[in-house]
Length: 261
Image (tube, rainbow, N blue to C red; front, side):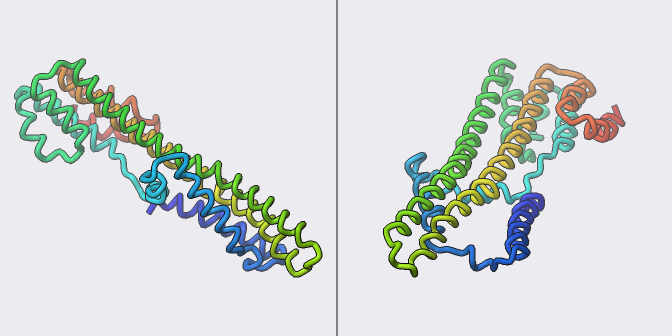
């Protein structure tokens, strides 16, 4: 599990709960089932209009992606590509074929397979960048759905407020109905704001960060594959790939991968 996401969500909910308790109200005061139906259920079903059935049904698994730890092993990628570069310069590009069987990263594997097959560099770049672009498009669609839910939830909250006020105004003579209707009127707005600001907007931001990290990794792999195809010196290849890292990370990795070159 992604600890920072868990800490963020739990911390936000905890601070809100603490504020409610220290303010003299009980937590159960803010539990209202009709408001849940209007805000959570209503905004979710509105997503079916915005996107496809599969996208609306799959949005919970998309939210789950923000909870998972995704490791992008830049150091491992650089080290592996340097090793392949050295072997290719020593034994020729065809010698890389036996290395491909043990390569788990399908993106890099496809690129190196094209190199072994003698494909032109421009075609390799075009094919790999097309696959990268398609990946970014899929990620953008998922992030768009999360952002849309974050937009719809406050809107449904305001709709719930209107519903509660109408119910209250139509039953002014029934004092027992004033409290429940007022609760729906106010709590739906609260729920909508909480959904957008505590869950949807942060989750969308987390997914954008993950997309950027995966994109950078694949750009490194494209550069590395093309460098091997061009016959670059492994040290030159390493320097190209290290430029993708943050300055602080770059020094640590540079000392490791260039120590024997």
